Image (cartoon, rainbow, N blue to C red; front, side, top):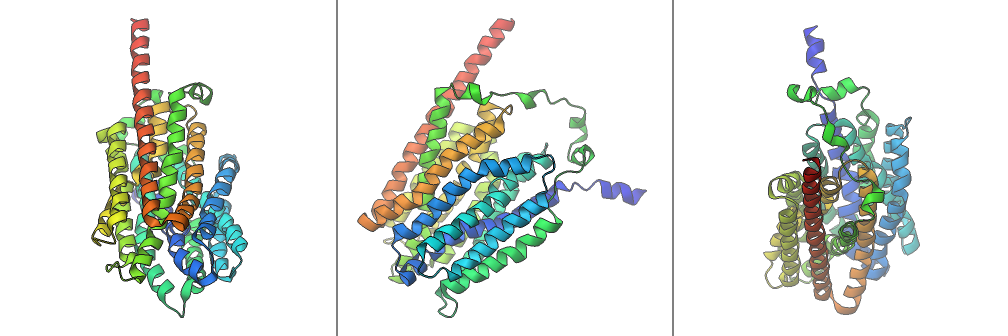
Length: 433
């Protein structure tokens, strides 16, 4: 009996967090952070321009964003088979990434395979991870989400080292690296999909994660919030959502293209520390940013947290502009951008809940994510066009401008919404007095 009681005290949700970390560490990291490392090698090997190859990020992101509502419906179906969905997603990412080794000089093959990779990534990461964490965690949801997403930083630190070695090795090259990484994604993530991922079987499982004091508490505030119909009439909401287009634009340029830039400097003898090392440092600080993002929002508040993130991103942009003259700025860039990651990884979901409540949280967040996806999808392509015509310095200046516009819009809209909510609370208090 004692053994059964001890076993029952284990909360399976924490194993789900471990599974999510592994998903973020390998298949997600391949799709989001490792793919840009191939840019220089593929463009020089196959004769593509930066603009042509950068379209793989744009096309893949936009198509996966359009598929996200359908994927969400699959997860919300009463008879959803989460293991089947995760197996499908893992196979799509792994096989499609490996198949890029066979694409050769056919740029349209890269586009098609990128679409499949990003759809698979949406199934197992963008939609899958938040759905799982929300289904398992009532208490400690922020900590669980932060830990789950920190897997991408941990994976980035390790996989960037492999990318640097494999891509620079003539006997492996970008074709061999594509094949190896795709196989690695399947080897790591398929067992997770088959043996770890599942929804809670009963409410009793969820009770194991509740402190004794909170088990008897009612959750009156859990249903507070606006409907989407109400939110759509608030002009500040649309400023808030539209600001994420500019956040996506700078992320699509800065986060995806810094590695090809540093590789170019390295090849020309203008960067001595190694691009793969900077990428690993970025991964280390992104772990910190993901885990501590919720703490920043809770302790500093939304506006101060956004201001901090904006200053960090601007510092990152200036570091890239002058890194060829002062190489140590490569690590300043990695630290600043890595820490600021919380603003666009967990920021949209945190701020949507805090500002608009939980009543139609999923619907409102979905709209916000579409705006970000548009910016992110276009960001890499626009950056490529600018680099092809005017060089990297102009490209980094453009990302700084996007960041200034994006964070200014977020600061204005969030502070206005917070003020509006306070005024509404005062009015309601007077009415009830």
